[in-house]
Image: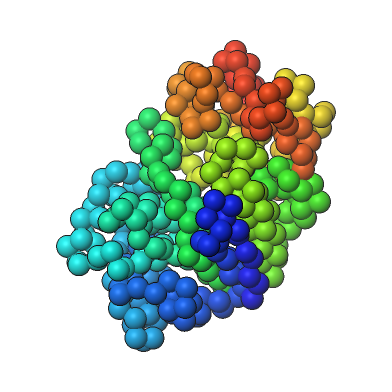
Length: 369
């Protein structure tokens, strides 16, 4: 078991830890009692995870003398919307979930984002914990305190910063994931290497075959290192005003592709496409060293991830989606772009994102089909 601290610069008394290791899920009841005491626990998960881990988690909590209720919702990013959030809130209120309750967000990135947003908003905010069960949720979605839902206009446009009391990442849960879900999560690990640690990017690349084969001894160190990288970035910029924006590499394009494709791609698959497109853009603009795009493409291909924009998604639709991206400032689309593997670019004003004109964005999109 490894414990990774995530200090909170704005609320140091509410700093939290990510506990990661094999079999650590068994410690959930004890950790809840110690770090997140509550009258009742609302376990929020989706319809895929509920039969795998939902009932098991509920039984473990009740066996430890804790009161718990299970609330599931239909699986899929397309269900991370206002109607699902409202339905969960209504059902929890009807079940008597009050301000003395806490949420356990159990599952992948959607369950974490949605469960966290319910916790952030119900009764004006109640405590919660993250129990991620996918690579993507462990290395990215569960760390950092961002919660939210999607709108028809785009992804994660409504949300709140709401830090968990702790994160519990049991590597053993990754053994049930299909190959494409492993690859999707590792796309975020590739991103962490590109934005912060070239040696780690190489490590993620070398581990591709073992990770895709669900070798937990290979996945464990990658999950742990990614959590450390993201935790350090988040701790220095909790509210996403500065360097934390480097974690958006690949995501401006990815969120547009996801939204305009009707979420036909897994999040990590869209991120893989986005990283290739944005690395192309970085080289074209002279921001990145020659060879950066090629290396990003090699890493993406090692995990058998897509690297081109689907033909069914029109370039103009993607541009429209990017215009409502959270990084837009004064009407201009901005990107987190690499200067090299392991190093991110600064713009002329010292920001960690770079403003790019629509014709240049359009050209990079068309070159990536």
